[in-house]
Image (tube, rainbow, N blue to C red; front, side, top):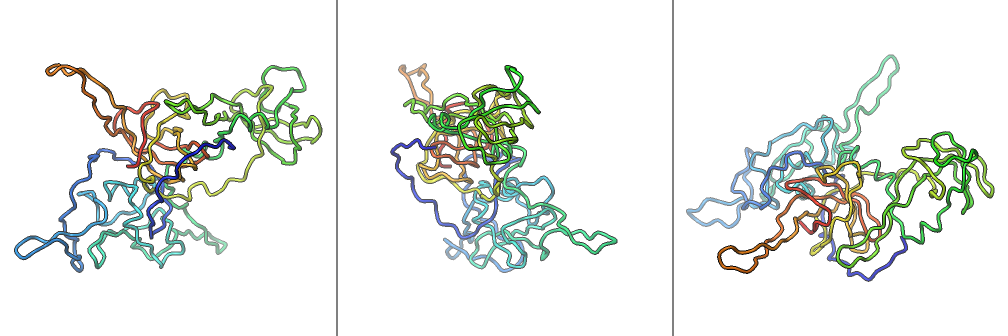
Length: 385
């Protein structure tokens, strides 16, 4: 998107030492929103951790980088259907802090990936900080097939977020400026004078040199505007299907395929891009002082914003956002009458959930609701957790 605006880059993301693919899918959002005091629990077995803040006659305190769940397991066997967010939620009060306790295991081929069947082991390091590592020495679960001697991977690595919740938006998400929409190639007619077109219909298009075998078809949706200022942030593309090139000319001839909604004159065509690695991100808090709003929800067939809803927020690459950034959602502040003292009192907005960014544009981003603790509404604020 070629829209520009002046914006101050927010604080740099805290440098981190452990890298692990990671995403989002909290399954037990029942924990308190307020971090508990640092734990005084000693690690089970093994050498005692380093002790801090203790003096003679007082119990030692274990130093911890992140708040742990008091009921966290000592080991956990990764199961099919798990996500990295849901696994982290078994150990941490704040699942996005996974990388701060993850210890890369040099014995496995790719220390940044976790597979079903891996056993995760919790322990404390020599300085008393909590850590998590793969206990098994194996790499990926393998299966041998007969009669041929052949070894194949039995499973895919655990994704950071539920694949079915975001995959269609990752591969079909499009937000462009008006200028980009106007400059995109477009459908001018079909070969049978119909009003709407669908699979196997032949259509004609202009506006570009058609040199790709397959295109995606989009319809410009409603413009996105920033709450308060009304600033234009782009227009969302509504995915309609694909078009296969039959002949490049002016107009070019294409055959519609895999349509999910009616196609009409004026709908735009964009080359079908090869899918990149969709899940190569990990959760971490958004830069300090990040503040924005929920602009829209992507699944228009669902009335409520709930866990695993995809939303658009008015923060993007210009604000320093990147896939994996986690933000807290807050309800709006409101003013109520004071029945005793008179006048009005302003009530703060309480935290209502968490979102995790998974696709970033210049001025806006797609984010997945990871936790929904209270009702979430359009224009609710999002901020650094």
